[in-house]
Image (cartoon, rainbow, N blue to C red):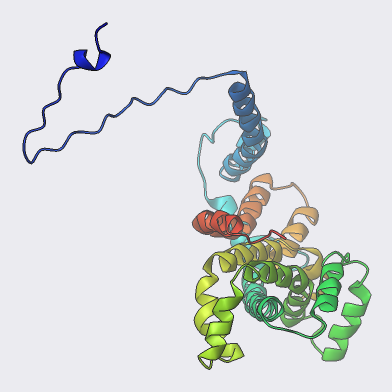
Length: 311
């Protein structure tokens, strides 16, 4: 019987040469019924959101004559920026006809202090509950967990009384204060769960090196919190910017955010309804959070996968 090893061709390797690794060709993915079903479902889900958005965009660039023709899916025969200019500068919201720009800047003034206050306070509280021996920490966590699911309508009247006694009711500061109070429970729990995965040995070593509470937080914890900060930032921007009920309840006539102005623009109208201006106004309201998400969406996914919302 012939030895199978004897019939193999000899491989000669010259001095100084290296044998090239064998590269196997990658198998082509096979399309089966399950893959087709998943693709069909994803296409339907994408169409469910993209088709209304497409109609919204193309309608905002049409004239009213084109809209009256009824071809909602057709591209504009004459592109115009007039609906956008009207929605931003001239649209009437209630009794004022100054466009959405007033509400836009009101939303910015509400958003910035709300973000700074809620994220900074929740980050410090979550850090203390996760990594320091806080008395009654378990009871405090249970209260936070219960407060995170209390409907806003139940505590609306006590919050109105509180802002009245503080002297801020009917102002932008009242809206920012309520957003901070309402979002702190869930944001604190998110930070606490994220910081809970940090090894205790790291904190003990920092304490041995004469690290104080604030020094450890500023020099060790914050540099490790980039992903979770972006997750909370996107969540807070989306929630605060798109809020309507808190703005209309606590803002008053001069402190209403952009969403309240948009609702007044659409529901309060005289004569012919300007559908193109309404579509442009809706897009102006939605653009800021969309831009934030598209810019930071990659980091949002990384933060979630790093354990941002796990228990």
